Picture 1 (tube, rainbow, N blue to C red):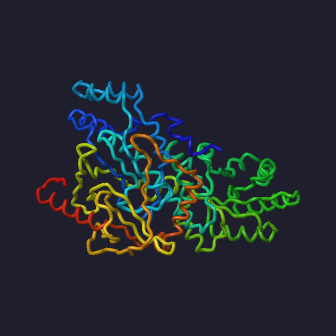
Picture 2: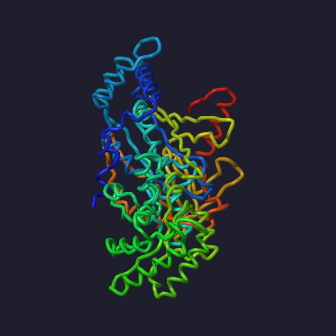
Picture 3: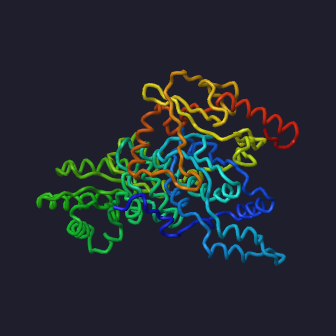
Length: 498
């Protein structure tokens, strides 16, 4: 089995330094020419709202990020390409100084992040990057590209798996995914989110995810009769005999599957299941279950697919559907009802050099939700009696004063934690001075970690519709600093530093 030490991204592309928006590079060139390219900065990636109108989000994508960082450099081909780009006036876009800088580029930054499989919430930094502003700026796009998508899909998968009540979910989305890379990332993130297996064979090889599959309608149509096709499939795949019964007439297909199942049973074998892929899944599954039971095939399961998501599954469960295994594809791997997480990457602190004090940076907006938190942050999670109670976002320089958090969008709302409360800080070191210091856990460990995490939250947080809002707030000193900086910026009509 291939382990986490092999990444699809680096295996396929090598370095991904050039996978960035052009303006990251033009700004980096500008910083260099202005003489501030080595100025120390901190950037943080966070999101503003939980996806899918849910009550929580699942952090995912860190291992691919680590592999990209480990191999991050500009190849000769990358630099030669950038050196060839010109402007409409015919002049070269990038300065010779910047092109030479890229030829010897090497990361020196410090990076901290929240481990994959951790439940996270709006405003909390998923990753914190500290280093020369050129490095921090160049890393923006690739970090957002990976973390935004995998976090979105892992969250969707967790919701789908929650809806089944523990019954296995198989991810069948590769053919509907957003391209090859999207399909691979979705399979990986879905497994973190709780799916039992994927149909994606390459994801099975690269990531060690269990692979599962049945057969298509084309198999049935290639034979003179449905019964003949089922018999042939059971013969060639006796240990993986799940028969798709809706090519012509579903209930008649169940009858043919029963004939094959009884023949297999007489030979000491087993018909593993039948799959429904169209029609009224609640009714058809109930009827199929009755027919299978009456024939003495109680061990044969009823599986279903057909554009499922968490809401359809929850409805089918409420209708008493006899389905115990769920194939979910398009709506899972595309994040169908919310195709993007909306994570952002913002400058939060800056200083002239490593010996100078940090200057706090805040972005002000007419929309309160878009006002950023100044400083260099850590997230502290409090828990009591095995359940999580709330999260405090605090500044590393200011530290924690007591155990009170204030809602960044409503200062009249606050929550106090006991001084004796147990807590843990979520962001951990990933890179120090450009060298990876973090060992990525196996994907099975990440998946198990998420289940342990979800068990520590009250059920109201995990409701699919109208969930309770988990308490997340700013530590008191950070809250008041942010308020002060906003007032200064607005009174002068421009950003001010502290």
